[in-house]
Structure formats: structure tokens, C-alpha cells
Length: 196
Length: 126
Image (cartoon, rainbow over all chains, first blue to last red; front, side, top):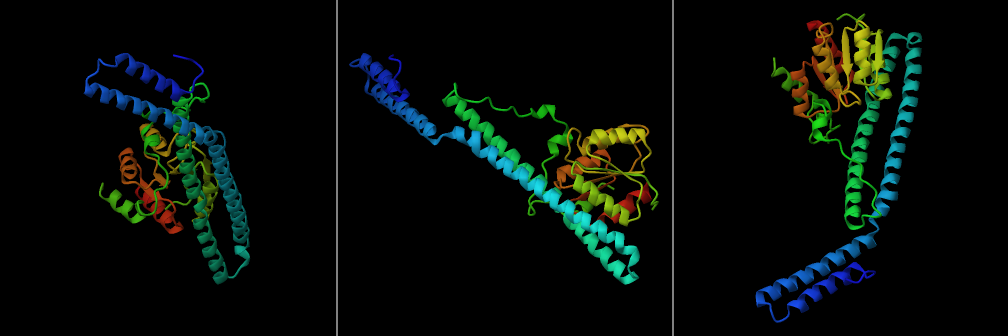
């Protein structure tokens, strides 16, 4: 088969060569099958051209790293802002001894509510971590596709940890559930009570 | 409940450690130490005298569940009250924690009242 030709032409030439060598010796069923084979070869070649035109390598080289960097920056900025809020709360708590009984109670109650609300940073951080993990999974699959269509240019895909190597704690660690799927504290309390 | 209890809080988010420490301070628990993963926590537990562990689940290199199992398998530590405080709210997680010997389980986001109630419950039964 001639080298230097595009894949599509090479496949078509090969199929034509097979067909012409079998001309006159084929049953009608075999001719139909070979025709189907030729069409399939054209589809494969077309799909390869389309995937190449999509530049999927750009997804791994640029888009996914940029997206994960942006998400890391979100976590960093929210952590910084949360720590500023906590600094302010601790300053307010330091003033409590100088306040009257009722005012001290109001300030303490407000500060407690701010502490409770600040736990958002942990939850959002974990949610963003799940999104980053999903992006990395996409990155691995894109690398696998690129590898199968263009082995010479493909970067090796990072390996996922085999399930057998993980502890039960790691296997069950999936981060925050979406509100609709998450068990409430009351539901968890009932579940724990059922063991007693 | 004994407010002089030494408490070890374990979480890989420094902000969360700070929040829990401050909430504990409001509850008059002043003897609080921190660790940022299960391995560091286990080393501190083995080196010290703690009357309560409050641990996150999702940490590396050792998760809260794995820490709990290590604590329950250690003859000196096995009776230490252990509260899991985590965003892992699936039933299978709660069951796994219970089977591993968790004393109580708080799902994030939580409020100060829940934390106070669970601490009171586990220290009363300790």
C-alpha cells in the first residue's frame, strides 16, 4: 500500500484492491458485505478527520488546566475572605467583657451565627474539589481518545488509583451531597438511634 | 460535662479548625489541640491524653474513618469518645462510621447547638 497518503485514501484503496481482486468470484451477499465494509472504512476515516479538526489536544493543554487554576483561585480567595471574617469575629469576642449583659449576649449570638455560616468555605471547597476531580477524569479520557487516534502525539494519561488499593474511608469519601440527596442531621440521628 | 476535657479536632481545612476551636471556646472548652489529617491526629493521640476527638472524614493521607478504626483498635485509646463531623451525609457513610465505633455523627454545615448537644451526649456516656 502506498505510504504518504491520508488515512482515508489508504483505506479506500485497500478496500478497492480487495474488491477488484475478488471481482467475479463474489456472491451477491459477499458483495453487499464488502460494500458495507468499504462504507465503514470511510466512516472511520471521516470520524478521525473530524476528531483531528476538533483539536481535542487543546482541551487538555489549555482549557482544563485553565479551569482548574480558576477553581483553585476561587478556593484561595474564599479562604482568605473567610479568615478575614473570622479575624473580625475574634475582635468582637474580645470586646464582650466590656459590654453589658444584654449587649454581650447579642454580640455573642451574632458571632456564633457568623461562625456557623463561615463553614460554607469548607463545603464549597469540597464541592469545587469534586468538580476538579471530574475535570481530571475528562482529561484522562480525552488523552485516551487522542492516544488511540494519534499515538505519536498523545500524552500519557494519569492513572487512577485502583479501587482495591483504597481504604474503606477513602472509598466512601465522596464529599458533600447535593441538598436534595443529602441526609439531614435529624435523619442521621434517627439512623444512629436505630443501632441502640 | 467536663469542660476541662482535652479535645483534639482534626480537619484538613484550617478555616474549619478555627471555626470549631472558636465554637468550643464559646462552650468553655479551652484545652483544644488541632491536627490536619488522620496520621497527625493518631500521633498526637498516642503521645497525649485526650478525652474527646472531633474529626472530619475526607482527609489525606488518612481519612477520619481510618483514624476512628485505628483509635478503636488501640487498647489505650479505644474508649475515647469520637465525633465525626463531616459533609459525608450518605447513609452508607453513617453506617460504616457506626460499625467502626463512632460515638456521634454531625453533618456539615452544622450549628453550634448541634455541636454542644452531641458533645454533651458523648461526654455524659463516656
